[in-house]
Length: 151
Length: 441
Image (cartoon, rainbow over all chains, first blue to last red; front, side, top):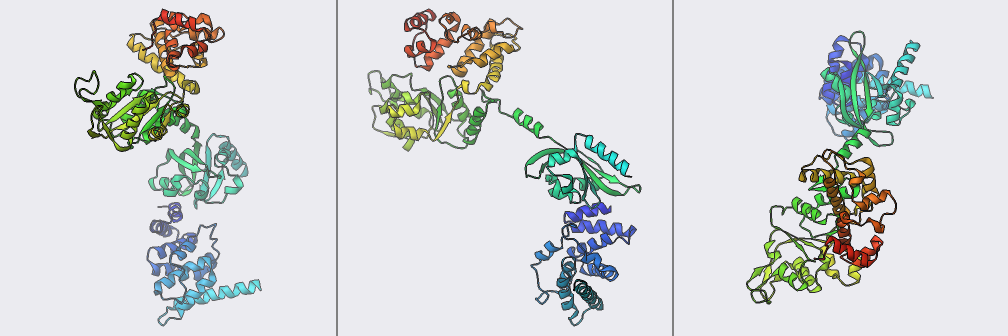
């Protein structure tokens, strides 16, 4: 399986096949961030939220801009359509932890502020993972940087 | 290497197929001139765009052509598909797809080449025209519309009114309607309303009982009873006496009638196909046909255009009749010469397809075996077209009896009109009728 085949599956929104192809490619190209970025989305759509978050955590920790600088149109990013498919749930609404986590991840591709709202809500939960708090703080830091940059 | 790239671009621009290449993310990185033409996009509009938003091929919506190659490992060749260009116009294409690989044999892009096959499709559609529809030859748009209409009404039992000049093939149309209908295996009776004396038509259609009139020596069912469950074709329906028209109207409305001389009401289920060659609007104005009957008959009107209005059918009809009469006369007549056909195309065919058929039969008889039909083999009436005015007095010789007959039929044996059409006096026409032994039946 090639990266290109994975790309084709990803463009046709066949996330399980794309995941298969991308995972295979990552074995030989573990530093391929382009694939990792897409693989995160694939994991969210194949019900592997933990896997998605692990990869997301790794990428965001290393370089948050890999996600935040996504061009929705030029990259044919599926996140807006995936988010709207879940009915644009708000962070304070009643929904499962995994759903909030998934939406927090997907929102970072489209809106850093929205993503922060979800990770902030997740971090506020009692048994919240330390990694969630780290992500929330990284996002907060990035938002502040942008504010400084534009002020 | 810019020079090498330039060279590659020139090569790709010189070929007759559209070519698009994509990188491994499926973004277009090259489009040649032919592809620009076929798709209606300029290079700048497509470079960097995802190919699925540009090519808009029907295959892209289900399975990407390059994806198929990636999955199967086999290139696509001459795959029939359809694209929608920038303006949304549909274009049938044949496409090829292949993968571009790097030195490590890893896919790094794809190439789609395609050609517009619209013209080919148009030709194929032309070839798919119904050339022989239940024995009716007609390639013209008008006749194709007639065939289409007949197919469309095949599930219906609605009454049909066929309108057309004499010789246009109204009876063949009726045959086709019956053959395509749900009643095709049921009785199909034909009645020419003009051949029966007025007082006998009602008896013929609805039957009579013994003693109803002088010659009614026994009970006899009419055509409607015999056609029960099936179809009846009433040719020359406008010739029907007004009294019989009322009876027909009742059959159409209620399916009931009485035999002549009887008071028992009978019920039938008969589909009516009627035909006339007269100007129906004029007949209505003149009160020759009842308006209520006309509306009952005219549920599905089918107008057959005269041959002069669909001359593109002439070559096909000629070919068909040559084949028919070659078989009949056990001859091998391969074709008709271009000059002879040109002459047939010039003629106005007042007797329509029937007249053309007679002319070809005549020509087949006159043509020597293994020879083509030439101008010299055609009847004088047609031959004289090449020499000057169509209808001069000198044209009449024995061989054009068929043409005179067709004119007589066209004008219902109105000799004044036929003589006028031929440009001769009534006396000359009378002499000709005598010579040809033509008498009105």
